[in-house]
Image (cartoon, rainbow, N blue to C red; front, side):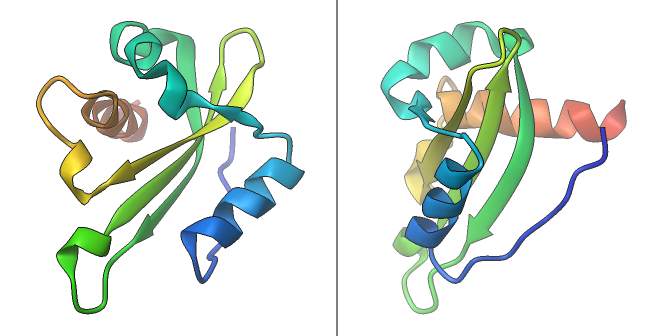
Length: 100
């Protein structure tokens, strides 16, 4: 599948546009599901935002699809990439997708 990349000025604008594309599930509420079942998800969109003056303002927005067709988003803040987090699992999935 060919990925298209879009650039939005803010995280909220990216979330709004993804919602219009059917990415309506908030996977942040299902973090354990992502951590333990990354093989059930594919990443369709990734948006990274860097804080201009504060690294704490950094965020990554993932548009993901489950193997059952459920579309949703996961937003990871700068501190979200701990060793056992869903954000780390999604980051690993991104790397695996690039290698495939």
